[in-house]
Each structure stands twice: as structure tokens, then as C-alpha cells.
Image 1 (cartoon, rainbow, N blue to C red):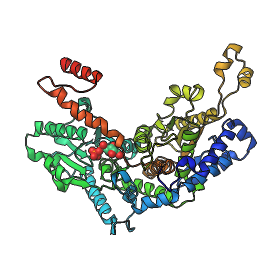
Image 2: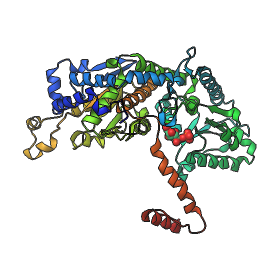
Image 3: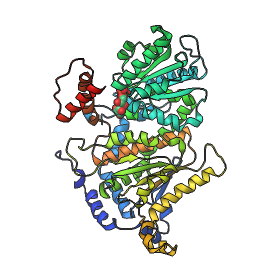
Image 4: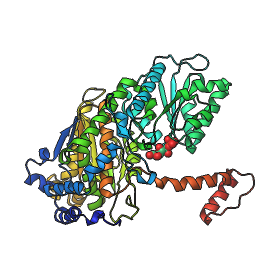
Length: 543
Ligand code: G6Q
């Protein structure tokens, strides 16, 4: 451990939490609720249009005080300030982490190395808005004079997951005459299926890549270029059918895209934190500049909440600390994210990158191996579908699976009783998980003795409820920023770097080595392990 700095498990609050855990680990939510009449209202916070109920977490007041003390002792406040101030907190890449600047409204400055970066941020947003309107109004024509009807975003990871998720989340607000597709995988099928029914004359490709060198994205981009040229047969057409979102103007222009049609961003925006940058261009075209700005406002409001509100009322801080409690103390391996809103169907997938690429780390920021559990496995499906599939395990399996329920009081497409039924289900699930059904209750229901054990629900499964009004662009911004800052809180306490991703490198390097071995005419000399060598030989023979 670095001299002068205490490791996490040496902190007084961590040690006290260990003691507290031994004391409370067998407490049942049934008892806690029956002892504390006001628990449901007391262990809840309302802010920024979010009602966050954490009363069904397996905590006592003492646990919460100690978790808050842990946040203090971990220097969370100072770490938050360091991020907002633009300090190079991503130490392993020597970068500032300033995605919060992307959503600061006009009229406010954000200084980085003595320069206000906001004029550039707003210039890009304005340029995006101008372009988006041209497409939306049919003013941007393709090479043969036809109006653009299809927009295909090509990008992967942080240059894909945010835009797809937000497109799906805000579909209700999109311009329906335009068709949007997202190609990310290098698998031929992704491109083939996304384009098989499209007319090249009416199709615009947005090549979204921070580096403009990512193998999958560049492979798909070149395939798209060939696909367009097959119909339009003139390289001049590229400028009309391709725009780029990137930080790499040199590579963009090498590809043949007019740099006037390039939308830039900056190295202080990490990939998985980039959906509020120009990476959101497809979103701005889909739901319009006004809705995009409303989404940015939502992000900003949550940013300000995170930065300014006392920890005991600070929703992302509370959520982050509860996650630490479940992961590092209860040893829960996963967290199920269960949105009861069909439009959020891609939200769990988006969160997987945000949380797992950020906090899936085994060493501290100074490179020491951690001796506690870090980031949880995030997964989930929209309700009520999951109830007819994996909820069985959450209720009666042998694993502890904490859940985040996300629900809205209003429907976006109200039809009859649907929304009340949906809401009843989310409340019922949280209730069933917490309180279960005892063997005695099962018997009283008349179950035969042979079925009592099968029909018993132990309960005591922790969950939080995030209840909001309606899924608007603003609400979506708040919800995403909430999770971003929850991730930050956890990384700050776990003493890890949430902003690098070295774990994705090795596979990339090895794939680069194997590609020529699969493609070469002559049998290559293979120097891998015996398994990989055999697989390569078999593939070469059978392909
Ligand atoms: C995210 C990662 C990663 C990145 C993709 C795409 O934090 O850095 O998911 O977004 O690898 O990178 P490019 O935008 O450079 O193509």
C-alpha cells in the first residue's frame, strides 16, 4: 500500500462496518419493518423528480451512518470536486474526466488548464442542432437529390450503447418518418441486416468513433462506404452520405469524409461517458435538438445534486454506498436492474458497460491488489417479462441478488388498465422479495405438507425503488447521471480508477495477431497454446 495512505480495509469506518455487518447480517426485513413503523418513509429521499426508497435494503440506521462515514473517510467530497474541477483523476491515462461539462448550460464557464471549454462545447452542440434540423426537415439531400430517410450509426462500446439506449428510451419523442439503425458488431450479419432493406440514396451513415481507428467500427465503416458506392458509383457521394463523430480529424479526412461534416469532442470525455457529446448526434436527429437539450438539462441537474447535496440526501451517493454494502459486505455478486418501462429495454445493457467497465477492477488506483470485492455484475430485463423467467431465482434461489427497480407513475402510451397493472407488479415484487411468505403462512393457505417448503419464500432480499413521474428526456438524463455518479461514488470508496479500461486490451492485441493467421494463403507457423493452435487450424480447414 502506498505510504501515508490508508488502504480501504484499514479505515476506521470500514472496520466499524465489519462489526456492524456481524450484528445485522441475520436481521430480517420483516422484523426491521415491524419494529420501525416509519421505516418506509424514513429511509427514502426525494430530489430532482426521483423518489428513492431504500428502506428494503438490509441496513439499520447505524449501518447508514457508518456508510456515510465511510464516504467521508474515503475523501469522496474532495474526489467529486477534483472531477468537476478537471483534475487528471484518470491517472493511468493522464486524463481529466469532464463529461459533466458537456451538459453545463449556456452562460456558465468550466475552466480547464486556464481556458473556458464551454464555448467549444456549445459550438459543437449548435452545429449538431443545425445538422439535425436539416435531416429532420428533409433539407439534407443525398448525392442523387433524394431526401435522407434512414440514419445508420456505426460505432461500438461507448460510441454505440448510449445512443441505442437513448434512442429506444425516447422513441416516443422521435420523428417517426425517419428510420434509425445501429451497427456495432463486426459480425457481417449486423451490417447486412441493418442495411438489407435500405436504399443507399436515402441513407446517411454516422461513423461514431472517438479514435477513428477501432477495428470493428472501421471495418463496418469501410463496408458501408463500399455499399454506398456500389449504388452511387462516385466517391463524391461519400461526402453526402457520411458524417463523422470523432476526435481524430486526420483519420476522418483520410476516410473521405469532409471534415466540415465532422462533429468533434475531446480527450476528457471517456467513451462510456460520451453520450452527451457529439456521440449523441443520431439521438439529436431522432428526437430533436430541443429534447436533446432537455436530456442534457436532466443530466446537469443530477450533476449539481451530486456535487452539492449533503451525502445523507444525495441519491447517487446513497445508491453507491448501498451497492458497496451489498457487494463488499454481503458478498452479493450481481445487481439486477429491473425497469418497469418498456422504453428502457436497453438500459440494463447500457449500464453493463457503464458499471462493469468502470468498476470491474482488481487493483487500486495506485496498483495494489484489492482485498475486498469491487464492482457487481449488472444485468436485467424490463418488467414484467423477467417475472416469468429469472425472478424465480431471485425469490427462491441460493444466491443473494439485490435489485434496483425503476418505475414511473405515468404511462407514455396509456391504454386502459395496463399501467396500473404494471405498477402493481413492481410494488408487489419488491414487497414479496423483502417479506416473503413464511412456512406458517403457506400452511395456513392450505398447502399440503409436501409442498410447504417449496411454496415458502424466505424473503429478506434487498431492493431499492427508483420512482419517477414519466420517462421524459429530462428524466432520462437524470436517471443516467444518477448511475454515472453511483459508479463514481463506489470507485472513490473502493479506491479504484473508474475511467480506464485496460482489461479490454489483451484480447484486441491477440485478435490482431490471429487475423492474418486465419487469412494467409500459406499455412502460418502457429505459436499459441495447443488449444488455440488447433482451433485456428480447424477454422482454416473448414472456413
Ligand atoms: C469506453 C471504451 C470503449 C470505446 C469503444 C469505441 O469507455 O473506451 O467502449 O467507447 O472501444 O471506441 P471508439 O469511439 O474510439 O471507436
